[in-house]
Image (cartoon, rainbow, N blue to C red):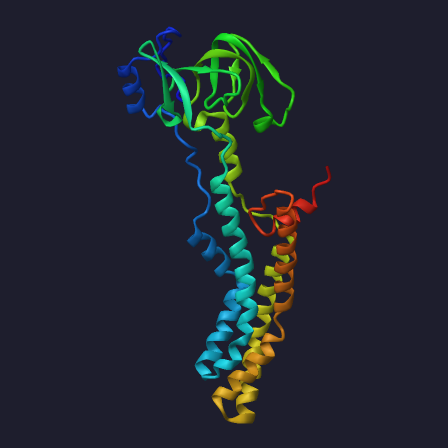
Length: 300
């Protein structure tokens, strides 16, 4: 919300008029969900597809494919398994993250045109007058105009003790009214809402600083540099011995594959996936496979 935004301060027994509500909606000052999104499924697939490990193996697979010996493409099973483990885990985490919501209610009781109206939370606009009673969840950040309540903010702050709120105090979206009742004025909507800020932070995925992933990628890059001239020498030697292009390709690829730590890559992904599965049993959502490594550094 802009600081220069015109504010309304209606009487609590009257509330906003229909014209005021329409004006607020035209200004996009109505309730809406957080606009921050997680990665799309194509983005996740592309991220796990375009890696140094996959590119190197794809080059070798292309060489084998051109030789016509399709049965020798079985080494791609390691590549596919490794990619599936990380991709499926991230897609599963994405779907769960998209479903995350701190609000368990979809309606609110507003005062408009001097009448009590039960409306969808998406109908709420800035400066609306809203009523809260015991057991209600606060759906938008609001300032109490009349009444006294105790709120439970455990959902948003982790604090389980009830907090006393009186006239002039802010009650945060996501909290619950445990006792009392009040009439309040909507203070924040959209991305300014406390729950929206938490949701945005939850869905934001920053680049993982993983030493394991960095080390593996570094090994693959070094191996790639080494095997190019070495592979060329092996190919020329095999071609000189067998005088068969296809046989030279197969023998060279077989030797080169042995230099790539494919088992290490697959083993790492498998171990991390097992860790993710164990954390899931404790209702912990791991957004990225290598988040397990980050968790291992936590010392509190």
